[in-house]
Length: 115
Image 1 (cartoon, rainbow, N blue to C red):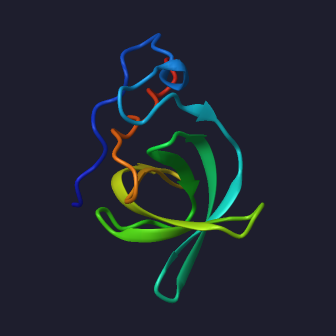
Image 2 (cartoon, rainbow, N blue to C red):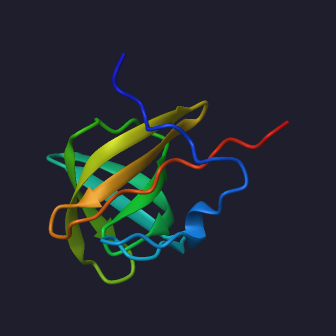
């Protein structure tokens, strides 16, 4: 079984509003992006972004530690990013990617809702 994501945030913490020393503040986001690795292209939707990386939702699985080019729909630009954690979900994955050209810590996965 591949390594999974780090432990979830404590209950009640606001992951989106935290400020980190290297990656900067995270901003909630819902942009459509593509992740390209060789001839593979995976559709993704951002959950949040920062200067150091992004958290995405994908239906097709991503490979942990793999490097993908993040292709932005709005302006056609691309940035290379490494998958640093994945969280398997019933309908896909949530993943954290760290840009290779910017040092950062990556946001942990959001805590599951309490019943």
